[in-house]
Image 1 (cartoon, rainbow, N blue to C red):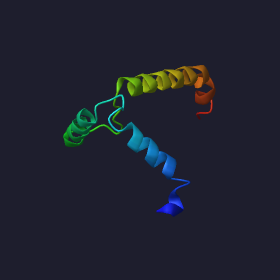
Image 2 (tube, one colour):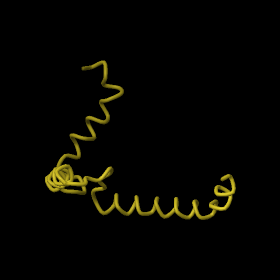
Image 3 (tube, rainbow, N blue to C red):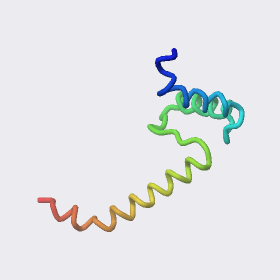
Length: 79
């Protein structure tokens, strides 16, 4: 629809232009997603790809450091 060309057009072009050039394997990702969905205890979040897992690990480390830095202040609010 031409009405959406300005807002959605660039994203659609990006997706079509990168098909087959993505850093991961979409078929493997699909199989992994199905495997996770079929698991007895599926993950709340499924992180796919080495780049994604590294990013999540980095964020968790930063959150852990912040938590420890402010732990005493936060716990001091308890009754």
